[in-house]
Image (cartoon, helix red, strand yellow):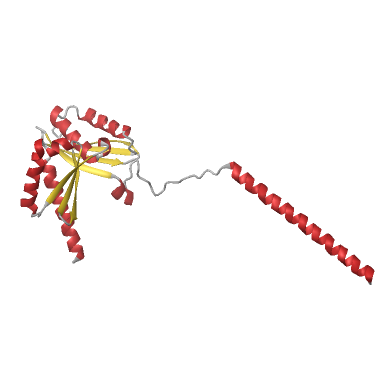
Length: 240
């Protein structure tokens, strides 16, 4: 029962995200999160252009609120807009930018669009990036083009949870072009990362000197104890 509840909630959140993405095309929509609170449902929309999402006088927000109430039976949905900090490190926004460029300039300049986008992502500090375009470009036969740069994990848990990926479609005269973007963020810590600890030289030398002084004092005390013991033995022999 608990598993079914989680699956149902995740499915609903996915459908809400797809619905908002369809209604906010070309506005730089990144992702959507649904959170429950005592007043109702809180829907956080991450976008690169918050002003266009809100609209004049909040018209887009009001329209989205009514649609969410009717489509998903939300009692009191509260939409919050959050701005994406770095646009070039968000794969969804990068894929949308590629799709807009292809629809605007056509498929003849697809190589320049891919290489320029890849350079912008790496200049933003990403560890690695991969861009895939599949479709009838530039000829009538379907083909997949791939550009990549940097270091990108392909297997293991890091490739699933650490590497960010997104998919998008561009509608051209020749047909639909599939776009796939993978980005490894700069703050990702890999499991095989080795950290070298630098110990300062002075504290170690001081500790060694302290140990040597202690040993010298112990040797002096032991030699003094031996001399006193020998003197006591001699005194006892003379008395006898």
